[in-house]
Amino acid sequence: MGWKFEGRWPADVKKAVVIVVPHTSWHDFYLGLLVRRILDVDIKFVAKKELFKPPFGWYFRWMGGTPLDRTPGQNKVEAMAAKFGNKEEFRLAIAPEGTRKKVQDWKTGFYYIARTAKVPIVMIAFDFGKKKVQISKPLFTTIDKEEDFNRIRRFYSEVIGKVAHYT
Image (tube, rainbow, N blue to C red):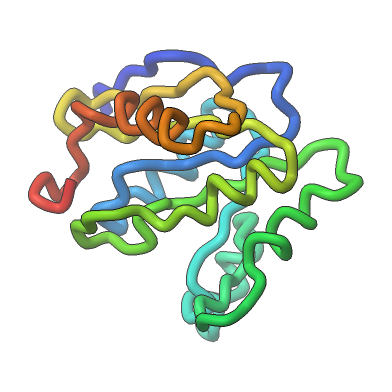
């Protein structure tokens, strides 16, 4: 398909929060599945609970998905961080935008899940402009949240999504 990879999956990272940005189209899903297969890395994902209803709910579960109830007032960060628990290997993909539309601010749950679970964040970008999949080195959260987010924003600063005006 003409796509290239920049970076490699860090082989020693058995647990991580994997953020995939930008999320501008349904094409991101199948591209993510393809990339996961090429990398030969087991990466689970969360998606809105509505996707897990019939007739396709079984498919999303079979593909490694977990439904996320986005109703306010829940302790989602702790619940997701607990999934890392005693597992020897667990990687969780999240789209920080929380939607395929353009957003001004990302949801920050991914950051707090990584911090609470004491696992790194691995950034993956699907750059449709350059037909390139970029994979970062692991980023461990620090006490300086602002600088951590600056590093994350720099990684994605020139990436163009499938629907460019949502990037």
